[in-house]
Length: 350
Image (cartoon, rainbow, N blue to C red):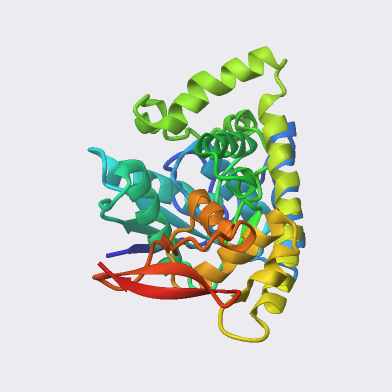
């Protein structure tokens, strides 16, 4: 069950420190370079994505990034609701969540909710924790966007993870500043800046031991790979990776628009997609069109191998059989086939 607390105004409350008494009055922030950098980042995000209102929720873990984001959001937004997810993966996690909640109240959040979750499911602990966290935040946010404390350094790590998957431009475009309902105002802010922000305010961030555990790929990227790249490339690797992600998001958005137009033309005239119309398009646009068509029809995952095989049905047709893709009800599978010059999706048993 969620634990909800409300903070009441206390004009006599001192500047916030970790775990001080609750107050709804926002603390006065010092005008240090780190504080100004975060305030400008949050302000720019609000102007860009919340012109009709500036009430937001913030996902607060108690770490430096989310603490700094919460304080900056309270200073820039009209009202802020803090959502603290307790993954319950370590002894004492309840106390960590309670301390983060107390800090949120001291910083001036309108309300604070602690969200205990159960972490289980496929993909290992890291993936299961992420799923549980986002599910809890999604249920608790109401109609508000949820601000997340992902920084430029997190973006660089995400791009490297995508490169390792080797699944194309979409996998290395990184995280978007706003992917409804998730907002990321700090994607151009370095992790060291959020730490300095906390130091400037006297906040003591929680140091999650999982963030130093080498069993997680992202941790090894953070502690081994990126420092080496920064050394080899003269300290510019994380910034360059983040810039690459931003450029790729712009390119992907344009290609998605072209693919949407092609899909309309390819679907005209009958069931499925016209191979003649698809064949006349650039490969990148054609494959995006097929991918969108498959996802819209219940295919759960579209891999690069799927797209290459389906593309061969269009441009390298030799009478070959259909291409099995994921999806379908139990006991059946979905198969893309070419019939009478059109791609259709059929169900096969077995």
